[in-house]
Length: 320
Image (tube, rainbow, N blue to C red):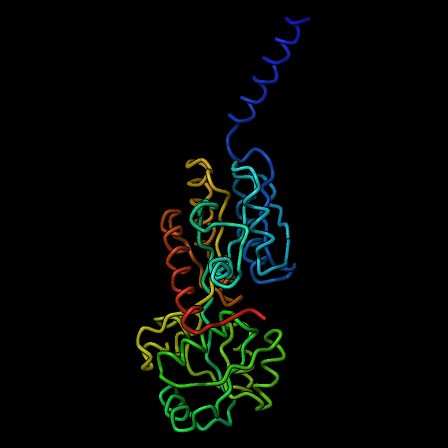
């Protein structure tokens, strides 16, 4: 009996070794996202996931786990095996959350294996056409001449658009008043109606109203002009030197992933992002295609977390 058990144990060990020795990926890959189905992040993941499936012949399963600004999804990832078969769509919010929540279920430096940046999302400064300021310099002058008279809308307290407005206040030396909304649509409605004067929003949400003449675009929030809106100046070149703020999203795995799997994922994701059909679709979503090597993306996350923390602390921004 002991001999039979020994043979059985040896057989199981051999099977386990054979499974682990199979080329990656040998089964479907799950990518967790912390947003509801239909979000821009999910669309990004599905675009790239389709290219991975074409390359590897394995399905990419998108698992939406919304809630707590992405913390629920992050906690699921942290508790998953570090074998490359469970990944996470990692948005800027997860780099900001440690500065906003008393406690988060992850450590940015300890709990993730950075893989690749999928894209960046520049914000656009837009205003009601009735505002007597045709450019950023005139808006700053107006805000200084009439302190507290200009209200800026955002999609919610401590959101990137809210913090973008606070950074504008800091660099320009003005005090526009923040008015939070529950999402872009109601904020844009009040901007068009003149209840608020200006707003920071994503290009995909803001530009349809600009093109229809309902609002006026003044600048983008990235340090340099955006490929999405090449004719629109940046805030930095408009006089707010050093202004550089944007959303972004990428792919990470649990801590401890094998380096060869991380490298294989990075190579294939970057290749997908460079394909014209993927890049074009991402641009229609208001995203500039990303890239980066895995170590570079890791440094990018840490730098972004430090930047956002400094802004949260200096402005006293808090969640609803």
